[in-house]
Image 1 (cartoon, rainbow over the protein chains, first blue to last red):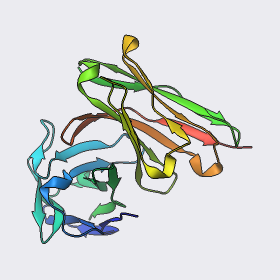
Image 2: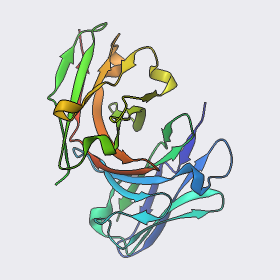
Image 3: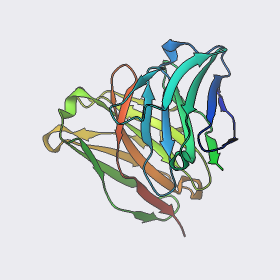
Amino acid sequence: QTVVTQEPSRTVSPGGTVTLTCGSSTGAVTSGYLPNWFQHKPGQAPRALIYSTSNKHSWTPARFSGSLLGGKAALTLSGVQPEDEAEYYCLLYYGAGWVFGGGTKLTVL
Amino acid sequence: QVQLVQSGAEVKNPGASVKVSCKASGYTFTGYLIHWVRQAPGQGLEWMGGIDPNNGGTNYAQKFQGRVAMPRDTSITTAYMELSGLTFDDTAVYYCVRELVGGFFDYWGQGTVVTVSS
């Protein structure tokens, strides 16, 4: 069974920078896995942030960026704002279907 | 504007089936895939499967095969998720989400709470 791994939690100070990663049990994550990133706050529907590794939606704040880093997909937040406190999920494509990571709870304080 | 509007909350007994709808508007329904994702209490997001509304082709996660169906009705631009043999572990919020082929996920439905309770 394929497992997508994310850090369970991260803490960052307002104005700081943090990178969240997304790894695969099958090996290095490449652009072929079509990495997507989503932000999810309690009581709301998830919100799409990044698609196909590094592409932003029209509503994605400029402080969010996606990349590949050390064999993983990565989401970097630069100049973190209090409203960025949320759960972040990556999603990878495996040909037979899609698999979400377990999510990273980002705390801003 | 693009909208995915889901049906209301459901309460079901163990062993029953549930059917959740996802009404699409503001775009060409057959131009995008619809996926279904769920989140159980205290758990993360889980991909269940998806449908191509253009031809009805489906792809289900292995975990749900044999127990899930994802039909669509193009005349009313609505996708459905049917889950049978419900157990307490199926209690979750169920979401539909749109994908442009190639991994471009964007708009989500508001979510439907399904509670399995005896």
